[in-house]
Length: 126
Length: 126
DNA sequence: TTGTTAATGCAACACTGTTGCGTTATATTT
DNA sequence: AAATATAACGCAACAGTGTTGCATTAACAA
Ligand SMILES: [Mn+2]
Ligand SMILES: [Mn+2]
Ligand SMILES: [Zn+2]
Ligand SMILES: [Zn+2]
Image (cartoon, rainbow over all chains, first blue to last red; front, top):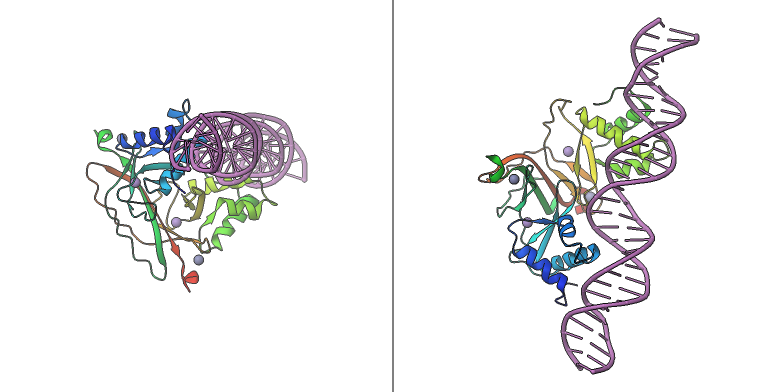
C-alpha cells in the first residue's frame, strides 16, 4: 500500500528528490532530516513512495540503500531499469539512462539484474 | 596481510570452497561451522583468503557478503572479474564466467563494476 | 466539528559484520 | 625436545543500517 495522505514528511521527501539530480541514500536523508522527522518515518515514507512507482531503490557498494526518482513507473509497473554509477572520489550516485545488454546465460531464466559501476565522475576527473 | 599459518579454520574453509561449485555466503558458513569456529574467526579467515587472491567477495541482493574461489588471481592481482547469478527459488549463487560489455558512459572514468543477475536456475525452471 | 484511521515518534529490537583484548596454537629457533 | 615469538583464536562488547510494536497525533472526509 502506497502513500495515502499528503503529510509533511511525504512533502519534504518528495521535494528532496525533485530538487536533486542524483540518487540519495537513506542514511543521508536521515542525517539531514533527523531534527524534523524520525528515521522510522523516513524509511516508511521511502518504502511507500517506492510502492507507488515514484522512487526506485538499489544497493550501493556497502550494501546500503539508495533511492532515486522513477521515470514512467507506476504502482503496478516498475519498468525504469538502468545501471547506476558512483563516484569513488565525491560519493555522488547517478542513474545511468542507458540500456545494458546482458550476457547470454544458457539454461537460466533472467528476471532482474542490477549493475553498479564505480569510478570517477566528470567533476572529479580533472 | 594474508594467510600465514595453516590453521584448522583455514583448512576447513578452503575445503568448503574446493568442494562447492557455487558461491557461499558468510552467513551460511557461520551457520554451518559455528560449533567449530567463532564467527569472528570465519570473517577474518575469509578476509585473508581474499587478500591472497584465493577467494573473491561480492554482495548479494540483500547486501550480504558472498565468497567464491578465484581463478588465476594472486595477492597482487585480482583480475577474475565476472557477473553473478542468483536463483530466486533455491537461493543458489553462481559465478558467471563471461565478459560483460559495459555501456558507453561519457565523461567518466570506470574503475570497477559489479553485475548481479537474478532469476531461475536450470534446476528450478522445470 | 467530529470521527476514523493512516501516519508518526519513540524505544526496543534484529541482523550482519567489526574491534579489543586476553589466551592458545603454530612455526621457528635454540 | 624445549623455549620463544607472535599469528590466530574465542569471547564479549560494540557499530551501523534497517525493522517492529505500540501509544499518540494528525490528515481528511462525513
Ligand atoms: Mn536509478
Ligand atoms: Mn564470482
Ligand atoms: Zn565525483
Ligand atoms: Zn534454483
